[in-house]
Length: 330
Ligand SMILES: [Zn+2]
Picture 1 (cartoon, protein in one colour):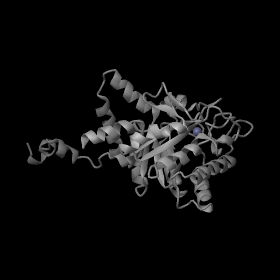
Picture 2 (tube, protein in one colour):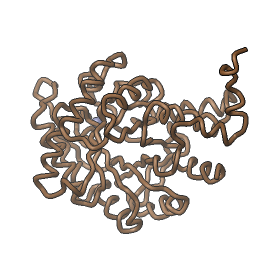
Picture 3 (tube, protein in one colour):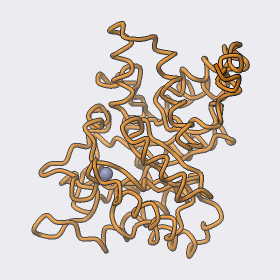
């Protein structure tokens, strides 16, 4: 045996094993997705997303307070309007009395150092359930869509959001939002995180139950990327970098690790986020319940794969568990 082929001596101890990681998960890398609904007292279990709930604004202190004490650094808010009147242009998205804007203000007041990102999309607020404004024939009308999304993003920035994160996949929305933020004096006060490579995935099912956001007709395949579309994903990432995105995101995570690695290669100077989506989370929990693996070990393995591929930021429903687990790990 060649002496240079003996590798096991280099990772025989738990500490020397940890030195093999290019990056180690920290609490700062985790962003927790939370669902805010328009009943201020809501605390409602989401069946499809084990352990996750829809929260009302008045419950945020008891929900988020203990997590901040454990080291929670950032959240991303998803509005779940159940009582509002939806219309074709998603008017309730930037209603000053809507759940997202009220939640931003409440969280900023309660936890001034918590970093608050907001998902920006129209689908939860449009009568047709699509992510943009439609032509009469049901196709996407791009220009009014991106103008509307930019208005919504600005409203969240004005309410105090540290980051706006458009998930709609409309062409040109990064440029439109960045321009709107800059022209309104928020260019240096709000991060723009783009869902750049968002694939039309089977893994969004539990989220749709959580957010009540299934489209009324058709599907989102005309704007979300085809799962095999690697070249398209790379073009979308390059475009969003050129249009002024501050952070690039790939979504979902585990089936798209090659895209994450490519994103890290073609946009090496940007923070790179991954969204470990509802179906990935539910799948990992279900596998653990079925005895396939240990939950904590598998959850860490999933995040290790994201870090190895090049991520610097992970949106995960496991965030509360990781805050405990990372304390145990020391
Ligand atoms: Zn949408």
